[in-house]
Length: 566
Image 1 (cartoon, rainbow, N blue to C red):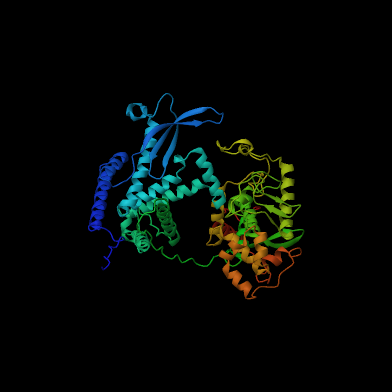
Image 2 (image 1 turned 90 degrees about the vertical axis):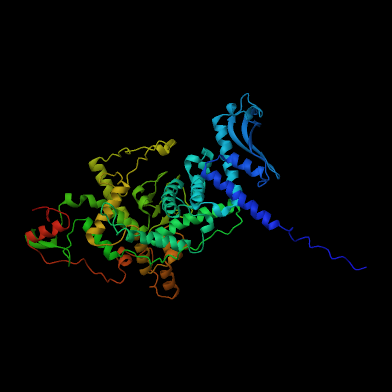
């Protein structure tokens, strides 16, 4: 008798696909009505259960007994849901008092905080069901806002805030809340573009379309806003940052909720130009301006003075009151260029060991960019490093001069303008130590003021760069003097990985043997370090000018008179 052919067990039943398609359309309709009419999440979950679209019971409030730290029993209100694979409980940290689980079924007896916790949990379950059943209908703006809500410090408990700050320190972020503010600004730009765009409309060209929209928008508006101000076209790096936030939001959705559809897009390639650095010739021009010397276009202005029975040709200088405010900038630029210390760290440097500020150790020839109790960051650790003896000698001269002025003028540390209310213990009180870069009386120069002064100096001498380029200029100068990248990373307190990433041209030149012979760090002088080939020569001088010409040149440089004695 022939064997009967068995039916394939792996094939779906007839009409299965049509039934499933109908369920999906019904679920999409329920979610769409719920969003348009602001139906509570619990009611949406109940409706999904009624039509057998969600195989899970509704969450509810219950009372659970927890053991406190002192060993006593404590009755707390929890949100409970009996899923098929496990029972989920989420504590509200509310004391139940005399209430029981049956009492919490009465809406009038439920505390407002407990009701909010239940609604928040139900909203998360509703969103999870929507991701499973109809992910293509979820708005992109909804995903971005939910991702930002997780990073919002206002939505975190004290324990979660402490954990987020710890994660920020290990990831190298200066402050997690600064990053949140920046992410909020980026989210505003993204939501403005995507509006009602859903996840089903995301494709490979989404990134390119967004970039085209952002860069063409100012041109479509005539290039100027309502006040007549020029609208700047966003940089590629700015657009890349905004799309990175979108990528993080979508990545969080995929990891947390596991949608059944593929959600990804291609980010536009950002063409990053070669690193532009400030040369020693440019920095010398800025330093001379800070010291009051006058540039006339071809050289520095000079004048004739009668001294010791002879006529001498000397450099003309502006009155002290005209350039006194730029004197702290000179020290700042030199420290930045020769040690690679970052902007804020330079302004906090002192001369003695400190707990929450860095300091220059002249005896050991080291620069400590962090205080002994300062927070460390993995990405930008600001590690301590040794200095060249020539650099140490320069700083020692500064310290000796500051000590003489401190004794002569009786310097006093001023209290800070604003105290941090949240800073506990000794960190709340200022450390009584004078600063390396100071205002003339040992006190610090505010960050915003130094930023403004550096921008003014660079604008006056024609340097089209920011102070951030000083470190790259210092790295290049050290490399041109013969130091290898491993030595530079030690002197600048920077990891070799960063140098390999940001100064790849120097590494390629080093690999090809295009580097001068290595100098002796113990004997190299500043002139050999800054101008190893003696290409710059002495400072250019202009022939002596008449007094009226000097006054005119001084006024161009921002002064009222050229010479203090006239």
